[in-house]
Image (cartoon, rainbow, N blue to C red; front, side):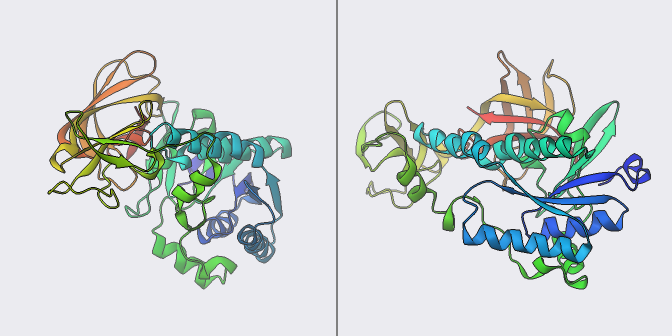
Length: 356
């Protein structure tokens, strides 16, 4: 959504992050139509010689040429490796399941866009995320996109007030179907493209192979144990498993067994029944608040424990060292350390943190 203030400032300069996909290319069209001076930029996060990246750059360039706006390529490979790839690998090596997009958005994409915008003297930045920003009571609020299937506010909960104050999300008031229709109608080069893959830097989403090829330490076999600590089998390395997994465990116990927890320090994986996967509380760390400056007292929220989860009623209470306890009204299945938990008040993001 573009606020009234920003609409009045038509002819304002905007730096748009363009992956070459249908969402960012349609965003370029919408921003220009609304009167902004748009500059497109593609962030080179890894291997610029990658054929897929080259094609994405071409699609972004072709879109900018069609719309008669400039296009740049900005290399952020060093930051991407430091903040995203290294983080991704180290979290899996510790037995946690990270969400690299959350980290990438704050520390690479939005920080990279702001750095380049400042360098070019450009006031606003923009991306093709399905969300919107509103200003209320001197705070910049993050609002869910209207398309429930595509809403990406979950991935943006970690943005700062500075980042939100300068961000424009043109797609917040559109559905994916509407965006595709706009792209086709206006013959944008990316209109033929399908959805991008889940983890951009891992081919075919085969993260297990990627981790094994890029691991920083030996990941030996270890013990499967039950909830009482009894050894019931052998695992092939903790990075090959995630919470809730049932298939490819390689053991037979007479009943279906699921991964309940991963103990990276002791190289153990705890297995149990589906019923034992459910829990009513969690602790979150590294909190970032958007709707409020700081959590002073307990608050009723709707909480999402992963991107695909439905928001669930919960109470979040402050603890020490920027952590919080979250207690759910109903048990949640497969709460996973390393994933983000994001808190909502109706359509607005209150804040969020990392499950610990």
